Structure formats: C-alpha cells, structure tokens
Image (cartoon, rainbow, N blue to C red; front, side):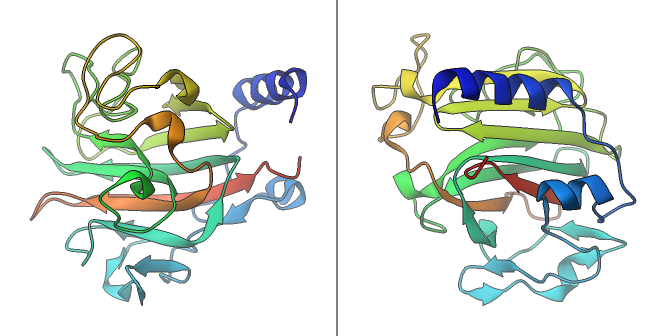
Length: 232
C-alpha cells in the first residue's frame, strides 16, 4: 500500500467514529464493510487458551472476563496484518490486563509475543509508558483517558504496516511508527524498555489476544470486532 493511500485511509478511519450497534452485534454498515464480530456475547467460539478452546465460564453477562484464564494471553484464532480493531472493556480497581496484537506465536516470551496496548486501572494517575492506552513499555499515551474502575471504556486500535494508532474513549492517544524502534531495549526518545528484541523487527501479522495478570482481578471485554484492511 503506497503512502498517499495509507495517509488517506488512516485519516478516514480516525475522523469517522463507528456507529454503535447493540452489544456484541454488527450494524448493517459494518457487515457491508467487512467487519468481523469476534465475540457474540454468549459463547467463547473462536477464542483459545493456548491450544485449547477458551472455557465457557469466561462468558459473564454478555462479556468475556479474563479472570483466571489458563494462559497469560488468550487469543482469537485468526491472524490479521493490517486492521481496525474495536472493543469495550471495564475492570476492577487495581486491575492490570492488556490487548495484544500481531501475536505470531501464542505465549512466546520473545519477539513472537506481539505488542501490547495496556489495559490498566490508571484513572487519575500521571501518564507514562505503562498507563492505560500506552504502547506498553514503548510509548506513553498523550493524555490519561481511562475511566474509573467499573465504567466501560471504548478502545480502537488501527494498524497499517508500521503505523499503530490508539483511540481511547474518543481521544487519539497513540500515534506510533514501529520502524523508529531500531535498538533492543531502547525507545526512540532515549528511554529504556525491558525487551531484548527490536520492535521494528516484530512480525507484521498475528493473532489478537487478551491478557490476564492479577489473581482475583476481573477485566471484562465486549463488542470485540475487527475490520481487516489488507485487501482495501
């Protein structure tokens, strides 16, 4: 995809908020555009805990709760390269979860793990590279947009090639070019990260996943949907 088309595509996506359907459904326009519903609100169809189907116990009142899932990151069993992802989430006070993208190898501790957009109870706290909405370890959100624990947040992630954009509760908070990360353990602004691999070299296709960190802490996800952009 050449740069002028990429620029136009991203501008269109960022200035055209999604029309909202009923929970865990697609609007007629979304169906026409090619959106994929990743969760129907009733079953865990399509979701995996490692090589096993996700336990149906995680479905609660029309949402997926990652509490006590058997793997660090559960994943949707289809790979995506360029895409527009959308979901809603809410969490308990003090919860630490995350949205993972381009997972080449589920639960790989190395470069195949994918990158994470942080889901964290950081309401009212200063923003940093670990705050809700951050490109975890790599880039802080431009402002703190997380809602208080117990309230639903709306998150969208748009990935096209090296471009990663995050919109949290209607505000774009991340605009990253992965090609700018050229050294392991170091971010373009000079800050350090813990990873021994280079973000620029991460696979540009993979699964989408939901992580579970803290025992006893719930994080619920609903309205999970994705629009593949590869064939646009």
